[in-house]
Length: 202
Image (cartoon, rainbow, N blue to C red):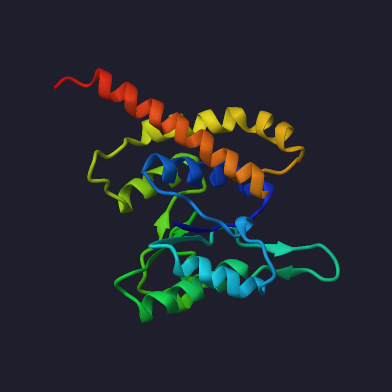
């Protein structure tokens, strides 16, 4: 599962929600944070998209970067979405992409080429992200509920301070922190599923 997300502190809660929800649904998330090596970054991103059955693209973080040398918009999110759209058009049987937004109808203005595509509207909340993930992915071995996925989200949110300290960083948007978040989300979701299995009547 390729995740195309902004690496911004304002997006932290939604970042954790995507990790928690996807892991709880049985997916292995991949992000560009993991990329290393000598190849050109664009080539590595496209290769990563090609190796994933699905890609999720959150374009809700619209705005301007006011850092020098000039105030500019950030184009990475729609650019990587474009790569995924092209890949699916060429290989419709092996890749599917989804777009997530915070506000209904805004994408018709910010990315009008996608008119006719229904984005998943999460409202800018963690529970909204989990709801929309649950809407598009149905798991054959049992569908987790949004409250169950919220439990995994809360667990990794609580652990984030410890994860940052152990990684020696102040940002969760780094490779080691991402790997640990996925690991802890897997433990939390497995525990929740085990508990559900022991309490559900047969």
